[in-house]
Image (cartoon, rainbow, N blue to C red; front, side):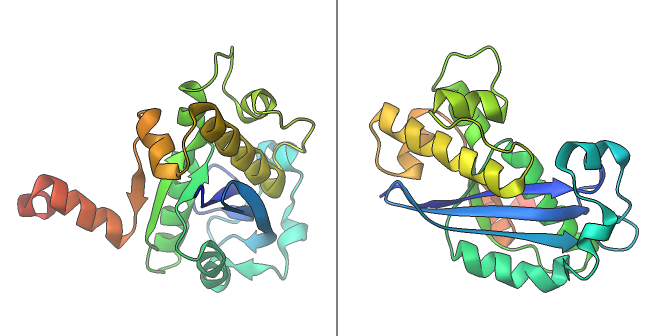
Amino acid sequence: MLNFTAIDFETANSSGASACSVGMVKVRDGMVVDSAYWLIQPPPGHDAFSEWNTRIHGITAADVVGAATWAEQLPQLVAFVDGDDLVAHNAGFDLGVIKTASRVTEQPVPDFRYVCSLQVARRTYHLESYRLPVAAMAAGFEDFSHHNALADAEACAAIMIHAAKRHEVDTLEQLAHVTRVKVGAIGPVATREHASTHGPMALN
């Protein structure tokens, strides 16, 4: 069963703690079955909206007034994911947002395992660029609103669904294995997996 949740964040500025929107798409057995999108109010000290970022995603400081803070929305995010492995395009960025925003707001970093659709695309298609719009087009997903967090999550999901069909695999773990893409982790599970791989000395 190809089950996962695709996720994408937009940020107010270059700080990983400045998430201002999130989009998520839930995939069950290779089919999109649910989605969610909301704005996020970045924490004080990380809440300046750079002109550059606003030009990219169109979100301004005024848009997030009254939106849930990171701490307020994190339980809702975790509940939507509901134990799934995450998928993101350039996953280091999006999982870095979860880690950094949680630490800055003194929230426990949640347990997530994840696979990067950018890395999967590199091992699946022969393209001049593996940016999300180009990779999504290779997967047959075109004309979406790039840098809208929900649209980007949908594009990311489409890449993974198409790649799984192309590689003739049924699960995210099989897709990661056949494309030789590492399954990453954050949160306590990452610490445990690191310890089991490297032995108890790794945590000293």
